[in-house]
Length: 283
Ligand code: SAM
Image (cartoon, rainbow, N blue to C red; front, side, top):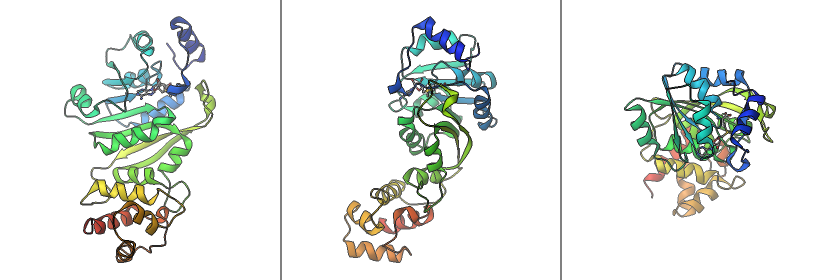
């Protein structure tokens, strides 16, 4: 069954009386070429956790090449559909649940033992940042994350300092991984077509974080604070976020080699790490 064919998608819809739910980001991919690029980007992985299988288009492409695919789907209307479309595979397991609420560490351990896995997903746009944040901040045993995201999000995650796209999510991803854009994907390659274009983003997890800090949570708090009000100076953002008198914060920034009047978006990950290290001593 070629699930990338709009005619087959329509047939499956009719068979199950299925209607797309916009609120669940249900835009299904119809390009075999893009599916191949996603599977290729996973390199030589044999086991994969998928998020949001929909009708099982990407799931089937993964199952053809991998030993095991575990796929998390929130919409219970899709469970009988997936039984039908993926019935021919004995290496696929569908888990019903919300990726944002599931205990992914336990799920990975249960399904894959102590081995690292990779993640593949065509994510609903409204949960892209929370899902990526969850996958990274929980320090799950992952090798690669290959996700379809809104093109702008992929640009943000791969942005350089001082560019308008640079933000907290850029730094979070840089801290844990090496990000790259695999390919861009026009909206016309989905059924129904979304309003925006997409891109396949690859996050290759680093063996250890890009910078070393005493308190990782503090580093993320500093980063979030620095981008909380983009038009304000770093000194103002930091003074509103941390209980340190303004003069002391100003001195601390200067001692870190960071001009207090700079904006958060001009700082590199290294500078954020140095700042968070110096802040530990005054908090
Ligand atoms: N993988 C299919 C494809 O590429 O054609 C469908 C992708 S569609 C953009 C997103 C899928 O994620 C839908 O099947 C939707 O029901 C599911 N989904 C939405 N929110 C979810 C959540 N919180 N947890 C798990 N799945 C979710």
